[in-house]
Image (cartoon, rainbow over all chains, first blue to last red; front, side):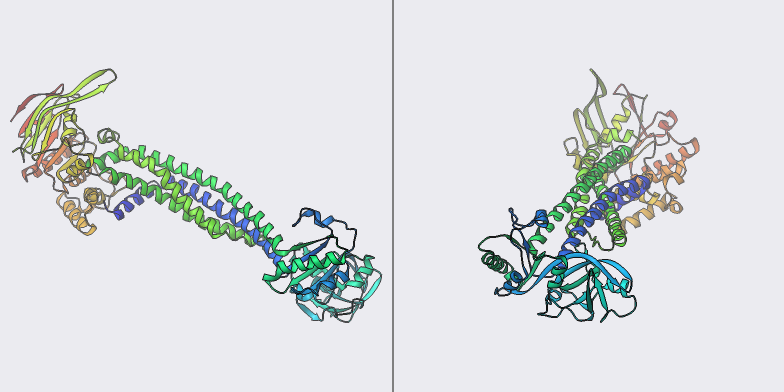
Length: 400
Length: 225
């Protein structure tokens, strides 16, 4: 029997029982679709977080006040208190390090902004002129904070603040009241959207000294350091730690982390999550495989008379085994293709519903899902096919 | 040399503790081109004999020489090849594959033999023509009458031009007129040189055969022309 004939015969058998074939393909396609959609979700979450971190800027080294005992990134970093302040001067000193390109000190707080009777809660970021370049941000109008004037009464506002307080009119040159101070708006940031939960469109950026005075503090929330290149990140990290140790009387009371380390941690956690959901979804593929076996066993019983006839007509055992294997393979392949399309449609629906989530299934998951579907289908098809091939022709012919 | 030579054939079925001699001490020689009716009551062993002749079953003892070759010792796949090329089966219940058309059913043995589709189509068309089924080629079995179904089955049995045609009660599921038609068709094939061995319990039908073998309790009790 020629392979093309085996395939055609199996195809006729599959289409000869449409309901059974439809249900089988449905079961297999749900398994494949589950893997595709769930890995798309997991990988989408991973990409989302990685992108968010990347949008902080590149080649970043972040200095936090306080010492994390375990090292690395730790939620405790967010609430540490420190005996010695991380000051603007500390930040300034870091520019001397050979691997450091630029730095930006950051003080963060919330306050009220008032213009023309309109009041709004805003996030205040106190920083310096280099912040714009370091964060890779764009200005929509005006200019950014002037260099070397930490006490200037000026502000750069986010796109949302501009829209809500100034409406269609220009904000440049207007005087804004923030808390108990008056500042002149000199620039408006370009719209950037979300950035690690802090919406950059809703901030008011002030010179660092102004912000520190406003919140009555000497310590900084962070110092962002940009290394001169990707290869120099680790070197910059070491230099930053050394300089601050000297400035803080030999005590290591700051934590220096690299963006890469944070990224790698999230990448790992969410990557593992993706594998996890893929594994759970794969269970449905195994179930579908068992279903293939069941369906094929029923098919063998149902078509016992036909198998007897084929033997009487001179079909060898191999021809009958191949015909049933081909049928199992066709069912699985159809299920895999349908599931792939279904999964891609599901991922598309997910992306449409949650726009910020880049829910694309990773290639390995798609390949694994399709491969597993075909392999389980064939594997679970072997036993029924062998049973068919071994049937006694006389017994088989009597069942008609 | 006979086409078929059975000598000392035994076929024993075990039913629980008891043994049933379906065939016992059977010697039978059938020459090429003969028309043999195998007759007997149910349980006399005539179907077992037909299965054995068709290489669907193996004897427990004795030898079966087909066209001079001992076929009892062949492997299952070698026996399948002999069935495919030299033996045609016609069954009482037609045994057509319900999802395939008449033409596809007739083409089955050619497909199993790995013959090219073009050659297959040519031979199937001719066979359907010969058996008066040309306008039924694309009909499925459930769209055919009983007589047409048996004609499709006979076309299928003869498409490989076998040496012997084994028919098991070929008219059992047909009314008298259609049965008569089918028998004439089989006799026509026999007249063309094909050896015809037909199992039947219809005495009238048996009387038409050139030779009658009567079975009883697994033994040949009568063999005459």
